[in-house]
Image 1 (spheres, rainbow, N blue to C red):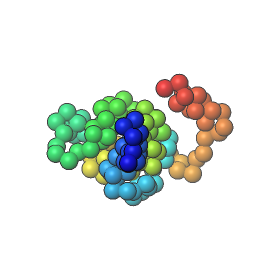
Image 2: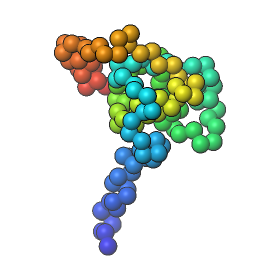
Image 3: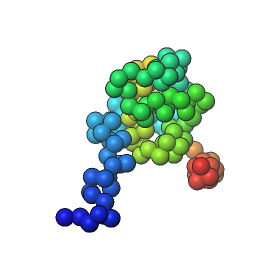
Image 4: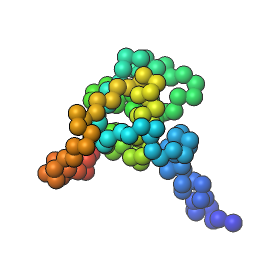
Length: 127
């Protein structure tokens, strides 16, 4: 029997379990989604976020509001404190449903140089 000041195992896992429950346990999107892909909310996505239908996960609503200004998939993950795989799944689902538009890099095989990665990391750490 846990003491009054001890957390139960389910309570300790709560923040991690919720996002994975929203994605149905999926950790990868149905189609590849680059970390540097830019995401913008559509007018349909803003309208639904303002008056969310029953069953719309709050994480999708947060993404819709956040992406009224372009955000990369990595930025969304950092700003909403969601695991990257969960963010990719949610954004891909939202794109499929017309809530967001994903602007992919022109060359999918492009890899940023280490200086750009360092700048992105510095920016994410400042959040």
